Image (cartoon, rainbow, N blue to C red; front, side, top):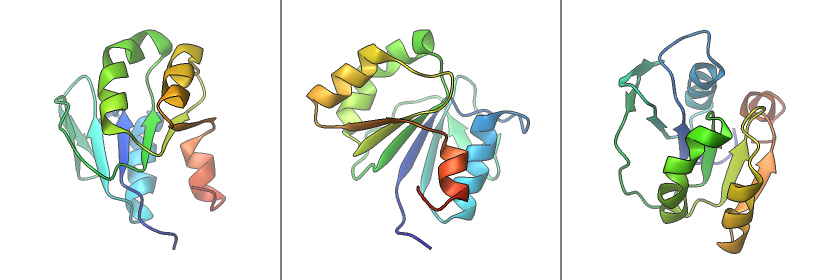
Length: 122
């Protein structure tokens, strides 16, 4: 198993048919510490989904499950977390946030967290 990477799942959902729910489940199965943040409180695979924006250190990855419009309210928060990377899952592509991240020394990638986990590239 690879190193544990503290991951913030933005756009987490308690609905088992959503990709964000599957991502929380798979990240947990791979032993990564997860902070799940969503529009509504709930639980995804025993992980509480919170609506707050807590301060935290050592964030490796922010993985996005929000469309471009819904990401805007999180711009400042994401920059404040200063993750090593942001993963733009399919449907979350956002040139404005990519540019902002790169100016702040944050790596960005358009990829699928679920595929990355299943192929050992996470």
